[in-house]
Length: 272
Image (cartoon, rainbow, N blue to C red; front, top):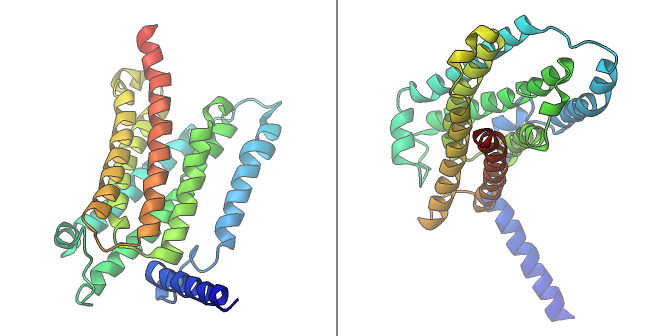
């Protein structure tokens, strides 16, 4: 009995030490909007899923598709500006590019770069807000009666990104996230630029030959994410190992789903 109790105490101690190493809390970040409590995020996602799968389709069942062309133009333009601002905020701030280059493996824990690390967390918050705004993509599909566009990949991607961003800011607060923020913000600038052009009408179709390359860019970003996560393990870098393992698995799922979508969408067209 004493051995069992001793082993249990050791296990509890190791688990406690693991949580201390991996999780960060009690900082000013924990008081930020959408970070201080999980309930706003849970409420938003519950409302999103309910509208997309229940209320929205029922509401539109006997109605014609709603013309929201100008709303979508403003929305896509806003997304381009928002994601571009995040990119500029990170890459044009003095000291940030140099820190990103020199500390991709081992963050500076001396305290001398605290202002830069705060910039990273701040940009992560703006990035997480953009993921919440992204949910409107699906809402627009419903209002335009494009229910066929609402695939498992589409919904999983949007919901997963909101949850992952919340978990990172609330419990992890890793500087490593800045690399994903930069790459994904760039991809979204390209993606929403494409969407903006499509909304302009049929006259723009001849300029949209690069649609499949947009999907390729998304796939490349996942390959980059997997390579970066693997390198963090390979070079024994300083980072929250449990979270990077989660991101590695998560990005691998995204890669699989996007490659499957690419083959289904574009390979089939090439055969026709």
